[in-house]
Length: 147
Image 1: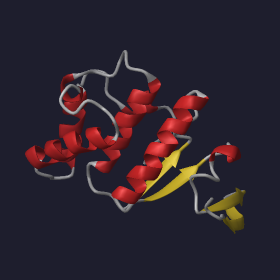
Image 2: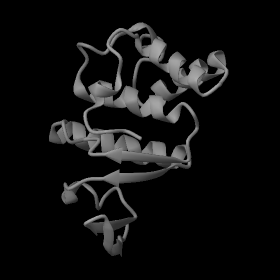
Image 3: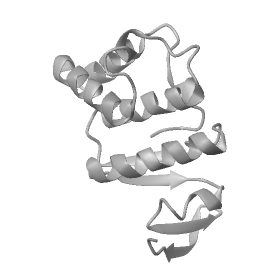
Image 4: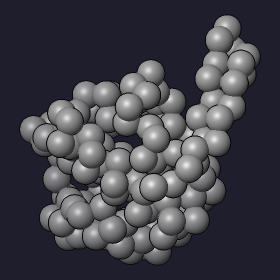
């Protein structure tokens, strides 16, 4: 799950690598293998593979934080990723960049993404279908054609 506001997901006292190690340890994963996977994910997400693990995110740009958060959520080889307004705090250009990146990552990692948003114009190029909800009930599900 990626909540709105990437920075709130990080402990400011942990480096990025420390946060990844903490996540891997909490899920009883091999830390060395997981960190190798993290470096691979950083490459997939256009982050510097080696530089990121020792850095802190306090002074990073919003898109960098979002990319690291996406990598953190992919580290466990999840099949489903739920994203709540993942581009809400980003400018239009960065929104497009992150959405294009997610589209590539989705295919490469055989991932299902549930994208929660009220910003409907950003969705059609990304989604295969849109579900409208009201009062916690689906009121309409519409398949989209790929252009």
